[in-house]
Image (cartoon, rainbow, N blue to C red; front, side, top):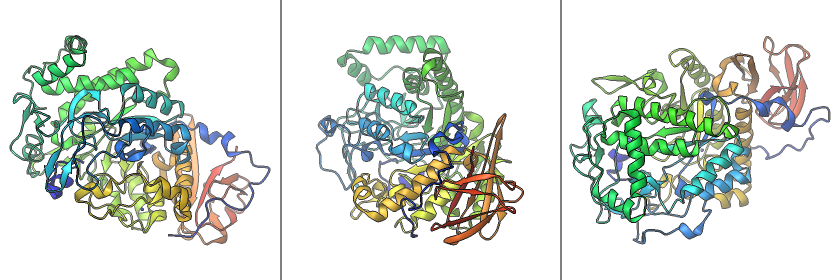
Length: 563
């Protein structure tokens, strides 16, 4: 989020070709229906996850009754106020099968904890905490987003649909100070100096921008709870319970009552109570790395306790997952992030993955160049770890294809590049990223374009492409977590293979294929007589003379074994 903060100096923290939605040809009778093949029972690997990321407030309005709460009625700058999206809205889309149709197996949404009640008036326009990164009370949910019961239902509904849930968490800072939101005590936060981002110290021991109080996350000095927070809990009738829980936490862990440990307790409560599967961690490089190891330790312990208490709700044996936003981290750098005067390997401090800021710069390179590079790095320098790739996001002011002129290319790159993938809401339907009148990253945060999905044929075609690739990715962990190998240069054909114990997944993909009749070279990977199925055109084929022949109108093929 550093770029946003530097460029906008605001307090907001924070992709054609012709093809058809469905093939006209019928699936051959001898091929078993897709839903009963082995593919839908593939194990889940975080290394190859297909993650969908959305701004809670901008995705789907499930309950209009909470559109305006806490007297948040001040006029704001364009796209800088609450617009009605909520937790119930996300749950409804899970129930409708929206994510399932996209092949999504994990969701991440912006923080839903209680935000500052007031607004800030900066050069970018009056702004409320619609984005979720301006915490007021980590122990409560913001009424604009919903209730804890709403969140509990969301997690349960996601799990019933085979979807993991990542909570977006902030440890680095509180929300801004407003007439309605006093500053946290000086023992808790610093307000200066402002970060310069040139050394380790002036990236961690500093405030990101003016009026964004920075938690003393490096301190081990015990502090008292803020009077304002105590008064709030008392008014809400939960003071005694909150204090008792804190007492138990500190007695059990032996941690000093330093600021970061209070917040860790409050964050891990959502794991302990709801069984959320992981954290997407905000502003990682602005906090001493030891804090993340501590957070992972406590979250992992809470996750294991939850699984023991809810054995019927456990999805698999995966451990608690943490992915970090180390702004400007790129996969080419390997494991370490360079602060200028110090390098830190955040993978050693609880993170399974880091968000990779590099793919958007690689996206227009030759497919083979991209795929070979990522496969090599993930199976050498980053072996045992992973990255989460993205092309557009909520706080990257230089997204790939901002005018949405290459949505098919974007899908192919994002969903077929080794590593985990992060769809940003609306990538799959070319949601506008160039909203007139907005300032800074607000242009990236328009409300989801549901009406265009329903009414515009071109958007429906784009969505269909993303769905087909997404489902293939979900059904075949080899796409993201397996090893890449080129089988033929022209037409471009490659394989992915994943072996994990007794589990083996093998697929072949063809890109930039000629439309009509084409042959794909698979010799040495699939033997003659092997029956395959093209999941894109829904066509059965058989390997003969080291190749398969397809006659479809598409320039892509997604080949899987038929069993």
